[in-house]
Amino acid sequence: MKWMKYSYSYCVIPKRKSIIMESIRWAFNTRLWTPNKADWMTALSLIQPEEKERIGQFVFRKDAKSSMAGRLMMRKFATEVLGLSWSEAKFQRSEKGRPYLVNMPVQRSGVDFNVSHQGGWAVMAADVGSSIGIDVMEVEYSGGKSVPEFFHTMRRQFTSSEWSQIYSFNDEAGQLASFYRHWCLKEGVVKALGVGIGFELQRVSFQLATKTLPVNKITADTRVKIDGSFDDCWQFEETLLDPTHSVAVARRYDSPQTGIRVTELVPFTQLSFDDMIASGEQLTCPDETMAEELVKKEETPW
Ligand code: COA
Ligand code: MG
Image 1 (tube, helix red, strand yellow):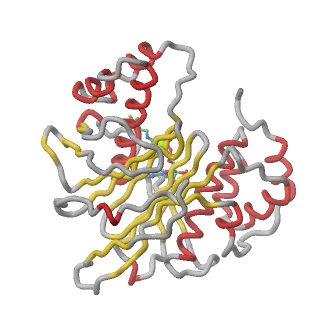
Image 2 (cartoon, rainbow, N blue to C red; image 1 turned 30 degrees about the vertical axis):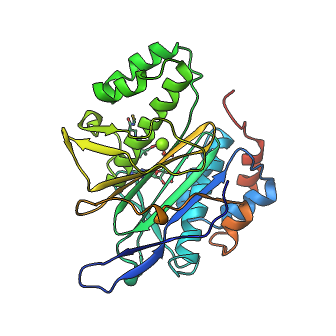
C-alpha cells in the first residue's frame, strides 16, 4: 500500500468562494485488526449511541469490526479534515440508510463522503464538488453453486454488454475479477445516488477501457451509459487494494466532465486503528459488557 498524502480538488461552489479539500481515500484492514476488550471499550465509547447499539447487535464479529471501522473513519474525517471537534460532529442516516453529517460546516458545503466494508477491508472516500459512492468487494466466490450457476442467478443485475466484458475472459478467475469490478462500479453509482435496493441496475451499463485492474494503481478511464447514452457527469476511480479486493469510487458531478487529471488521482492510504482514533473523544460511557460480548462472538459464520 502506497503511503502518500493528499492531492487537491478545486471546485467552485455557486455563490460561495472556492474551497480546497484533500481528496480522501482511506482503507483499513479489518482482517488484521484483532481488538481486545480494551480496544472494543475504547472504540464503542467513541461513536454515537445508536450506532454503538447497532454494532453490538451483529451476530459475527467481522461485521461489527467492519461497521465500527466505517464509523471511526467518518468521525476522523469530520474532525481532522472538516474541522469539527469529535464530539461536535453529528451523523444521521437518510431514509435509505446513507450516513450524512448533520452539521456540515457552511464553508464545506459541497463536500460528500461514503463508506464501504466487505471482505478484509473498510474504505472511505470523500471529495468536494460531486456526490460520491464507494464500494469494495472481495474477488472470490465460495457459495455452493458453480461460477456459471452463480452468474446465471445474477444475470439481471448486469446488461448484455457488461456480460460480454465479463465473459471476454476465458478463465473463471478473470471472469470473477471482472464481475466484481462491475459490481463495485454499479454499487458505487447506487451509493453516490443514495438510493439502495430497488434501483433498476440494468439502466446503468459500464464500458471499461482498461481490461484488468492493477494493484494500488488507479484506473480512471471507465465510462458509463445511463439508459443507453454515455453520461460524462460520472467519473470513476478503480483499483485493487490487494490482489483479491476490488474497489470503485463513483463521482457524480452536476455537469459533464472533460476528464480526470491524472495528477489528482489519490491512492488509498492505509490507516491503523490508532490513526482512526487519534482525535477521538469519549461520547458514551465505557461499556464493558458489550465489549466482552464482542470479544466472545464468532469472527465469521465459517
Ligand atoms: N447509500 C449510500 N451509502 C449507504 C446507504 C445508501 N443508501 N446505506 C448505507 N450506506 C453506507 C453506510 O455507511 C454503510 O455502512 P454502515 O451501515 O456500517 O454504516 C455502508 O454504506 C455499506 O456499504 P457496503 O459496505 O458497500 O454495503 P453493501 O454493498 O452491502 O450495501 C447499500 C450497499 C446499503 C447501499 C445497498 O445499496 C444495497 O444493499 N445495495 C444492493 C443493491 C444491489 O443489488 N447491488 C448489486 C450490484 S450488481
Ligand atoms: Mg458493498
